Length: 200
Image 1 (tube, rainbow, N blue to C red):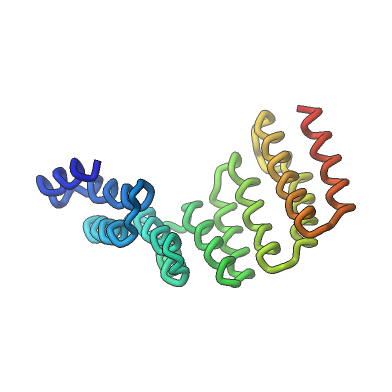
Image 2 (cartoon, rainbow, N blue to C red; image 1 turned 45 degrees about the vertical axis):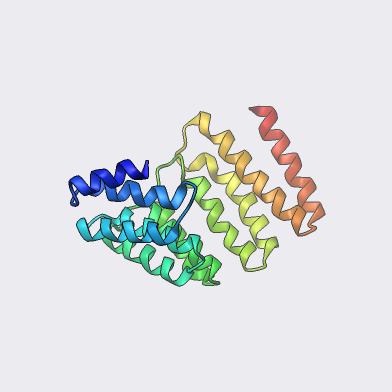
C-alpha cells in the first residue's frame, strides 16, 4: 500500500489524497510510524491548509505519541477552521480532560454535542460525563449518566435508536458505580438497564 501511495506522490507531488492516505497508513496500520505519519499530515496541510480534519488528524498523531499539549494545539486549530464541526471539539475535550482541564473539556464537549447529529449526541454526552471520572468524582458521574439516560428520548433520536443509547449510558453508569464501590447505585442501575432491555 505504502509503495503504491509513494508512487502516486512521485507522479504528482501535489496530489493531496495520496499524502493523506499515506499519513493514515502510518498512523493506523502496522507497522505504525508516528514520525512518518506526522511528516505526511504536515505535507497534506501544506498542500491544502484550509481543511480542519487534516489538523485534527495531526493532533491524533501527537495524542498517539502522548504529546498531549501538541495534540491540544492542533485540535484547537481545527475548531477555529470549522466552528460547526463536531469532531474536533470532542477530540479537544478528550485531551483537555486527560490534561486535567475539566471545565474546558466540558465546554469543548458541549460544542461537539451541539454540532453532532441526533444519533450521536447521547454517546458524545457520555464522554463529557467521563470528565467527572477523570477528576475523581465517580458519584457525580454516576448521577449525570443516570440523568442522561432519562433524557435520551428528548434528544431527537429515532425511536429504534433510543434503546441502544439508553443501554450504552446505563452500562457506563454501572461500570463507574461498580468501580467506585457504589453498591446501592449499582443495584438500582442494573435494575434500570434490565427494564430497558426487557422493553426492547
